[in-house]
Amino acid sequence: MGPWQYLPNPWRQAIEDLPRNRFTTLEEIRFRVGRPVHLYGTGWDLPLTHATTPAMVSAGELERVLAILVDHSLYSRVEEMRQGYITLPGGHRVGIAGRAVLDQGRIETVRQVTGLNMRVGRPVLGPAERLLDQLREAHVSLGSLLLVSPPRAGKTTLLRDLVRILSDQGRRIVVVDERSEIAGFGGAGVSGYDVGYHTDVLDGWPKVEGIEVALRTLGPDLIAVDELGGPGDLDAVWRARYSGVDVMATAHARSLAEVQQRPAYRRFIQTGGFEAVVALTAEPAPGTVAELWTARGRS
Amino acid sequence: MMVFRVVASGLVLFAAWSLARRAGHPYRERVRTLEQWQRLLRHLLPLIQWKRVPLADALEDSVRGQDLLYQPMRRFVQTLSNRDIEFQAAWDAMLLDMPGLWEEDRGVLRDFGRALGKSDVAFQHDQVDAAAAELQRLSDEARRQRAQDGRLVPAMVSALGVLVVILML
Image (cartoon, rainbow over all chains, first blue to last red; front, side):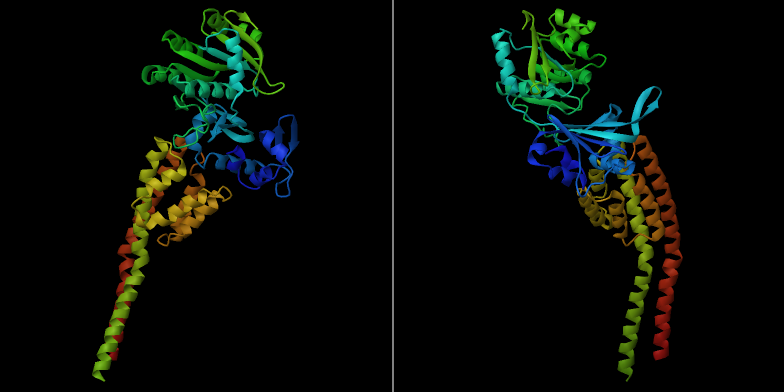
């Protein structure tokens, strides 16, 4: 179910009426106050023009859209909004632009919302097969792995596919899915994506707490987490590695060199925290392996 | 002739009794409806505050076992699943669907609907507390009116019926 299904009309209908080639490659739907809704797809972008949609998005309309996206229950999504997004069933992330409300230096919520960025999450089966082949060719045992790339280069998609394949091969995997993007929480405890037969999902758990709980109670062979970067994330991954559990993770970085420039990551990689680091690029297609670093060297 | 008068008197007395009951009904119904709304708010608060249950589910849970609110609230919750319906319009329609409420009760609940689900937990708590206090005030007033007008009007209607019977006989 695409994220546009959660929009009210006329937006929903306008997006469903897009030409097929646009509809199938749609990546982002952006609402900004005082501007038309703008669509971004693979290699294209254009304003949403439809007989039924207003030329500009008003603040009131945006507020209404947000209320509908959170099922008229803002109080149940405040923790997500503090981090600047909400996740829709199916793992579609909606970024929220607006004024931060601070309480003693901590973000309480976002008000006066000025923009929404709906990212279309799609299950892509298969890209991990190519990576696994490359790792086999490089004689890397598939243990701990870090996937790095800039946004929209396919990190999460690749991680999800790796989890699915390894899980179906019999590895017990726990996905700590802080933002519900890996498994695509579908409500009522159902995952939106196929993440494999032997996978448990800790949905909405912060990474540090989720990794602790996974180690203590769920007995995993491998833990998968998305977007390392918060304070304590790498320490939590270390604890998992010390416990003999492999970790597959993603992080934002443009290249391997950029990862190596970060002291914490450099130490982590040098001491064997990850057996391989894979840098991805969005060209020619998201999920393309640009660089592969292994303990044996770079390829 | 006498038999006819006795039968007619009986009918008049029955009609007067029915009318008297009907005249007292809005007073009794209002008290019961407001009491059920108060119970609903008591159930709703922990579902919002502790469990963070989405509003539609929280309202459906809170309204269980409350005969006067159950059907209108269920219809409201079903309406909400249609993403094209305005929340406030659906809420107002639900209030109109509850015959036990009086216009001033609807005003308080309409205001409550405007704030429901639109803020974080702390503010929702304040809103529920404020609505509960208003409902308590309305409920006290409704009980007073039931004790006064709710008895006076039926008594007057009954008395009128008895008077008619006396005149007939």
